[in-house]
Structure formats: structure tokens, C-alpha cells
Image (cartoon, rainbow, N blue to C red; front, side):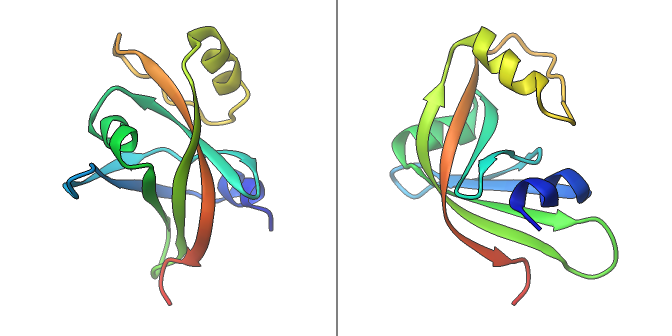
Length: 124
């Protein structure tokens, strides 16, 4: 199953872990990623702690815990690979996503691309 098919078909919860350049760690609940291809994903990010951390330390980890019995899911080890800030382009990209979460904030939104360095199962 491809990464795009996995995230399209699997229900669960995602958690993004980031740290700043001093090593101060933050974790946040994040929606499933936008899968660009098997080696790249993206997240829509507001100007909050996770986004600030990625600006000073491009490495992150994303954990997806599948809904259901047991502990199944994926861990993705990531490195920032780019960013889209044009709000119209971001909305165009988001409109192609099957499950959208509307935010009730006026904060600037960024579409941040990540290269996938490694994928591991949730447990193992």
C-alpha cells in the first residue's frame, strides 16, 4: 500500500514533534499529511510553536496512531524541504485534500514540505 493510500484509508491521530535550535521540544496534534509522493509530505501550519521550531531546526518526527485495537501506525522522520506561503496556492492545494480541517484563525498559514528520511512502524 502506498503512503497516499495508507493515509487516505486509515483512521487515526497524528502527532508532530519538533524542537528549536536549543533543543526545546514541542509536540502537537496534527492532521494527516498531504502526501506529495513516497518521499515527500507536507503539512498546513499556522505561525505557532511547531512552525517556529521548523524555522530554526528543520528536523521533525510525525507519529500516526491508527484507530482500533493495539498499537499500530507509522513513525516518519522528516527534514524540511521547502515552504509555500502564497495563500491562494495553499487553498488550491488544500481543496484537493479529501479530509479538510477548517481553522477559525486569521493567522498566516504556511504549507511546509518535508522529505521523509525514514519510516518505521509505530511499535517494533
